[in-house]
Image (cartoon, rainbow, N blue to C red; front, side, top):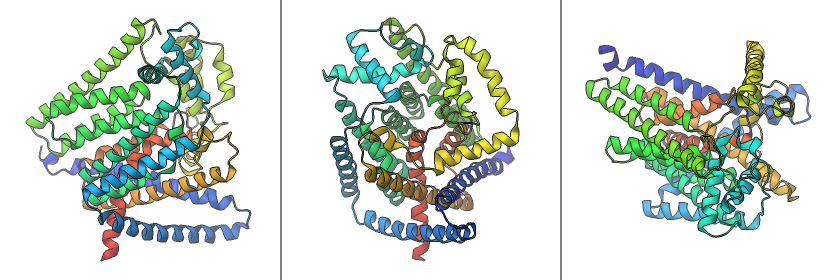
Length: 481
């Protein structure tokens, strides 16, 4: 009991989380510079000094930019800042959506076409081979169908306009969460950086499930961490919002796991009978409300005759099969897909998938090398948001500008997040910020083993933006001295 009161164990666990996040982000930054320098066709002996010079210039520029941003954001009153943030987020994204007519491709196309069939009650022509395995994808199609029914149109523009509103909501939540768990200046910097993050802007014209899901997840986190509601109400609302987000994008399990670990850590920090009761009650209410919403949604789809299955992933091992493919470095594998394509029953697929997974994880050095390659591709390498939004529009210069801007923004986020993490480690300021750090660590870790696409970074960005704001604040504070 004394051990818990002194918070030694709590601090050790907090240090481990901080260490992992910092090491991961440092590897991402170094990987970015390595990829950039290697892309240049120059002598090997020139690459190392060029690497060092490039890194030094980046640090100097980021420090300068951070000072300017802190100065600008602090000159506004709270009301002025919120108006500025709303206008900046809305105007940039509205312009993009109306100027760029993004094609609907890949999974986005399947889900959109399914939504139009749901509106018309045409369930017989839905792609059963796709939805019978990945039943959870019906969730986003159901959302699209609901929106188009409410507005009496199948024009995808209405989905894109709602995407803009979800982006605005996410931006404001990034600001509010950053302000609550750190301070007002940190929150303002976080909100500003997220509002101008280019992939968030560009992806508003894609019919992706990321926008609504990320907004719902963050809203749940905000209510749970920052609201003044009683703990039972906060727990129930969190469970409901995570479930609604999970219906659109299946990240609910990861978020619930992070919340469970966070609550246990907070219990260790202040171990007493009252907190034991609150923690147990919170966990029960969160999980119960989550399961009620998920089962209710499944019941609606089953009752309507859309699918006989619950909104779950009936082939969960597929993501690991592709994620552990050495030839494609954890990306989609046409060879694996062809190997399993003719098998439609999940139990039969599992019999082939599990041996494949076991074989691919058996060689530990090879697995470590694969994880390294996957981190470089997903986090250090160029973003593919232009692939989903303007690949067919023959706008090469625009594509290059977007990719370059996104890399600068992301590396800035990673750099300042490391500064924030190191300061939290130094001061042992582990509190509500631990949930954000746990989500970053968990989301990064899970992609060591499952399929990767660079667009999957989307959920990580607002989390990094929240932490980054504190890093910018700390840097600016120390530079003033």
